[in-house]
Amino acid sequence: MTAADEAERIVAGVRDDAEARIRLAADSYAFGRWRYRYRPYRRAVVAFMRWQQRRGVLNAPGHDVPGSPWWRAINEALLRDTVEAKLLVLRGAGIPSRPSVARWISFFDSPSAQSWYTAHNASVVAGYLAHRGLAWRETPAERFFMNVVLVRVLYAHALVLDSKLALGRLSFLGRLVGHPRMKSPQALLAMRHVLPENYPIDSIEIGDIIAAESPLGRMLDYGVIGARIDALFQTSARALDEPHLLNLVREGTPAYAWPVDQRHEWRPRTRSKLASFIGLLTLPSPG
Image (cartoon, rainbow, N blue to C red; front, side, top):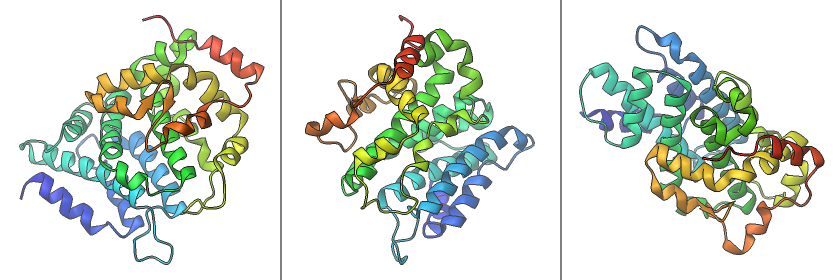
């Protein structure tokens, strides 16, 4: 059995058990003589999956409250790639079935913040591109958050990949605050404290989500990330060798499963003086 087939079989075995998915994700980082090197990255993955579990998006289709087909599919893509890469490393032979798997092998061979983000985001972006049909079946508020998650994980990667793009004059902080072992990358997903804890989102409007976001979150989105979205997607597309990623942004606004006539939702209603100052301070460096 190829590593890809074996990974598919293993992931299928936990498909309808969220707790088993989390154990599999953690186990994917627990191997080899130097397994301790993977622990910071394992914690980051498990922490986000725990939040997904609490929301219920990973629930089985037959659950009293079924989960999200889209979130389940994205999570499965990430699990399959990680498990296949682990199997190939353990076997010491075999050809990766997808470019994203090869990136995971590179991470396991030489773990670092940059190699982890490259592998993780390659799997996530591949999942986004493969499952746009499922995304359109979600509520507007859920699709809004899908875009926020994508933009923020790309930005987290940029902190260690191109800190001048991510932080401008503060670029010297990039590799420090961007490492997955730090709290900063988790703070990039701070909207998990704003979204309803339960899935699906059917009782809140996008405007309410934005209004409930913390001042820090709004400052990050509009003062920092918003000033460089196009460049962020271009840099990520090159780093991941995935030109189709550029189809998920449109003239400075996220466009994943998002109607053209609703681009205004991504423009700030107001902008504080602090957000303007931080935006100026972190203005992307030329080139």
